[in-house]
Picture (cartoon, rainbow, N blue to C red):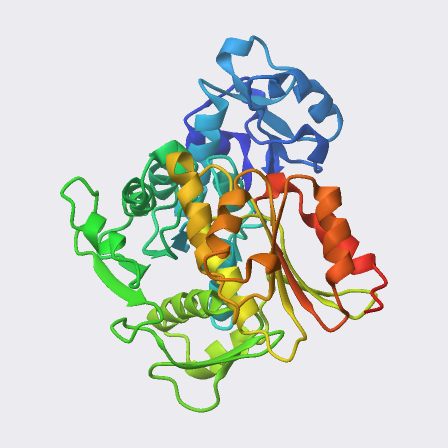
Length: 466
């Protein structure tokens, strides 16, 4: 992590030491949360709508912080400080300067779905050969990315940075901070449709990752998504000089694609084009994760990681909150818990996973509302329902006001008596549990706001006797 004296900190962030006598005070690490102070850290007070970190600076210094950044407009700081015009801008400038000091190369990763999984896979593969640092948790925004960089060991060779957004120009800012030499776009989904209005606009937002890319950089993108090359060709899309591209996906037209896939109940085996020997053992379910793995393989090959090391990396993957969690209930029933988030793209992926589950008495889907999809939300739900053929799902439980459209779509394909729609979660749970058998498999998926983890817990703890 960053370890500098205040004179160096001031020069790096464009600030000024309050007292020249404090120039040699050293700080190690940067903290923005007053509850997470570490000895000798630099506290950066940020101001929000309901709080102002400057109000806690004195307590932070008392608790062991070595110094703080301090906005000039806030008066006199309570101790050793670097004066700046804007603490957030100074935090970002400090991170950018520290990254330059380390000389670490940056791999930037964005996309509507799968960016966290892809980040973890890229990290695992590169770590077999390089000293690598990655984004922790969801530190992928204008505050989290600078903190990720400032936590980076001085000897880091490659930083793998996840870049998230909720609107236009947010990834542009992150790209200009991180200046990636390699960028990955996992896919273009429907998340943020309510804010951005169209998938084309989402694609434009994701391609902002090129705004800060170094000359001669490599863009690795999902070649199964036609919107990416379409937007890439638009004159308004900022691109570095000498941009190179590579594609990955399920279709053989891509540079990286699978020549074979074998699904099991807990993992996926696949063979990438150009790979020899046994299939790669991926500790994840679904074809969508094969796509994520192909993106990671493309990054690893670009950095000269050997095929043997790539296989080694997949064996050591540590995932940040795997989205589809396989749970065995008290009765022995199998639950696919994917109740963390949902969009049409991720909903299709989860249904695909359920489709590949073999040897079960019945396949049951509990699907809730997908939120923030904008004006076409009813149609998106209806289209998901129309995907549910009897071979994929035996029973459907739809939950929420939007999911009635999903149920209507499903009734076009499934036996209407096998489709249930509820707006009362307790009623849904009672009916669901009454129809389940210990040898069934149940997929639970919805947007986080629907709180379907309550359904997961009910199924998990039920003593099914059918």
